[in-house]
Image (cartoon, rainbow, N blue to C red):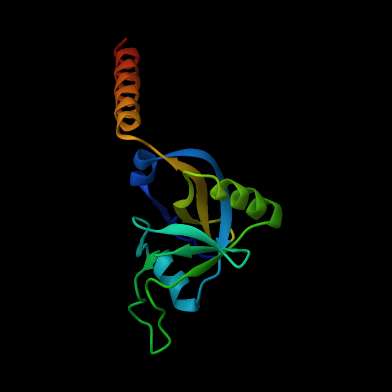
Length: 152
């Protein structure tokens, strides 16, 4: 078996913009050329989000670039993709999203050991500007403490 290149794309901006309550791993229903593009790392999570439509969870605005060697069967880059999660997790997410201020965002896309594309989604609440400043301050303090420990 050939070694697969580890692919992990993280939406770093999401941690800055949102406070994560909890995360769930979900499978993605993909077309053939989409998985090839993901394995090459041609994916962008920056403005994507999740919606619940007709009792199913979908990933919207996820940009997967067209496969370079694809034919007329190539996929549409920003199409809506279905996410595969368990029913009880979907119900839990649905009740939280009905509340004000909660949203579901994709945080990380990766290829697991079996070669399947997985997305880590998070139930999140938007941060206010002062929350963002406090988070940056806490990260700076943590970094300074780590530097101080390493010097000795």
